[in-house]
Image (cartoon, rainbow, N blue to C red; front, side, top):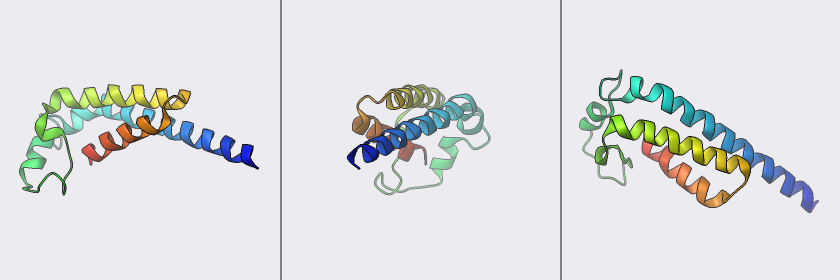
Length: 105
Protein backbone atom coordinates (compact mmCIF):
# COMPACT_ATOMS: atom_id res chain seq x y z
CA UNK A 1 0.00 0.00 0.00
CA UNK A 2 2.80 2.42 0.85
CA UNK A 3 4.45 1.92 -2.54
CA UNK A 4 1.21 2.69 -4.39
CA UNK A 5 1.02 6.09 -2.69
CA UNK A 6 4.62 6.80 -3.58
CA UNK A 7 4.03 5.78 -7.19
CA UNK A 8 0.89 7.91 -7.42
CA UNK A 9 2.59 10.95 -5.90
CA UNK A 10 5.55 10.52 -8.24
CA UNK A 11 3.37 10.57 -11.34
CA UNK A 12 1.12 13.38 -10.14
CA UNK A 13 4.12 15.63 -9.43
CA UNK A 14 5.74 14.73 -12.76
CA UNK A 15 2.44 15.34 -14.55
CA UNK A 16 2.14 18.72 -12.84
CA UNK A 17 5.67 19.52 -14.01
CA UNK A 18 4.61 18.68 -17.58
CA UNK A 19 1.56 20.95 -17.29
CA UNK A 20 3.74 23.81 -16.03
CA UNK A 21 6.23 23.16 -18.85
CA UNK A 22 3.50 23.46 -21.48
CA UNK A 23 1.88 26.49 -19.81
CA UNK A 24 5.12 28.44 -19.62
CA UNK A 25 6.08 27.43 -23.18
CA UNK A 26 2.80 28.99 -24.28
CA UNK A 27 3.59 32.10 -22.22
CA UNK A 28 7.06 32.32 -23.77
CA UNK A 29 5.88 32.02 -27.37
CA UNK A 30 2.51 33.82 -27.24
CA UNK A 31 2.82 36.05 -24.18
CA UNK A 32 4.57 39.02 -25.80
CA UNK A 33 1.97 39.24 -28.58
CA UNK A 34 -0.90 38.96 -26.12
CA UNK A 35 0.32 40.71 -22.96
CA UNK A 36 3.38 42.75 -23.99
CA UNK A 37 3.45 46.53 -24.21
CA UNK A 38 2.26 46.35 -27.84
CA UNK A 39 0.05 43.28 -27.34
CA UNK A 40 -3.69 42.74 -27.53
CA UNK A 41 -4.16 43.32 -23.77
CA UNK A 42 -1.04 45.15 -22.55
CA UNK A 43 -0.31 44.42 -18.92
CA UNK A 44 0.68 48.05 -18.07
CA UNK A 45 -2.65 49.36 -19.41
CA UNK A 46 -4.55 46.61 -17.59
CA UNK A 47 -2.80 47.29 -14.27
CA UNK A 48 -3.30 51.07 -14.64
CA UNK A 49 -7.05 50.52 -14.22
CA UNK A 50 -6.56 49.12 -10.71
CA UNK A 51 -5.39 50.82 -7.56
CA UNK A 52 -5.26 47.77 -5.32
CA UNK A 53 -2.58 47.05 -2.75
CA UNK A 54 -0.16 44.23 -3.53
CA UNK A 55 -1.89 41.69 -1.26
CA UNK A 56 -5.17 42.10 -3.17
CA UNK A 57 -3.62 42.01 -6.65
CA UNK A 58 -0.32 40.11 -6.22
CA UNK A 59 1.78 40.61 -9.32
CA UNK A 60 5.41 41.38 -10.04
CA UNK A 61 4.74 43.03 -13.39
CA UNK A 62 4.48 46.64 -12.13
CA UNK A 63 8.03 46.26 -10.82
CA UNK A 64 9.46 44.80 -14.04
CA UNK A 65 9.65 45.75 -17.69
CA UNK A 66 6.83 43.65 -19.19
CA UNK A 67 8.60 43.02 -22.49
CA UNK A 68 11.53 41.50 -20.61
CA UNK A 69 9.55 39.83 -17.80
CA UNK A 70 7.21 37.76 -19.98
CA UNK A 71 9.95 35.82 -21.84
CA UNK A 72 11.96 35.60 -18.61
CA UNK A 73 8.97 34.09 -16.77
CA UNK A 74 8.43 31.73 -19.70
CA UNK A 75 12.01 30.45 -19.75
CA UNK A 76 12.18 30.19 -15.96
CA UNK A 77 8.88 28.33 -15.82
CA UNK A 78 9.92 25.89 -18.54
CA UNK A 79 13.21 25.15 -16.76
CA UNK A 80 11.50 24.67 -13.40
CA UNK A 81 8.83 22.48 -15.02
CA UNK A 82 11.57 20.28 -16.49
CA UNK A 83 13.33 20.09 -13.12
CA UNK A 84 10.03 19.10 -11.52
CA UNK A 85 9.50 16.41 -14.15
CA UNK A 86 12.94 14.97 -13.35
CA UNK A 87 11.88 14.81 -9.69
CA UNK A 88 14.40 17.14 -8.09
CA UNK A 89 13.41 19.46 -5.19
CA UNK A 90 9.67 19.09 -5.60
CA UNK A 91 8.45 21.43 -2.84
CA UNK A 92 10.69 24.43 -3.66
CA UNK A 93 10.01 24.09 -7.39
CA UNK A 94 6.25 23.88 -6.85
CA UNK A 95 6.35 26.91 -4.54
CA UNK A 96 8.27 29.05 -7.04
CA UNK A 97 6.04 27.94 -9.93
CA UNK A 98 2.93 28.71 -7.90
CA UNK A 99 4.23 32.19 -6.99
CA UNK A 100 5.03 32.87 -10.65
CA UNK A 101 1.55 31.69 -11.63
CA UNK A 102 -0.08 33.96 -9.03
CA UNK A 103 1.90 36.88 -10.46
CA UNK A 104 0.43 36.29 -13.92
CA UNK A 105 -3.23 36.20 -12.93
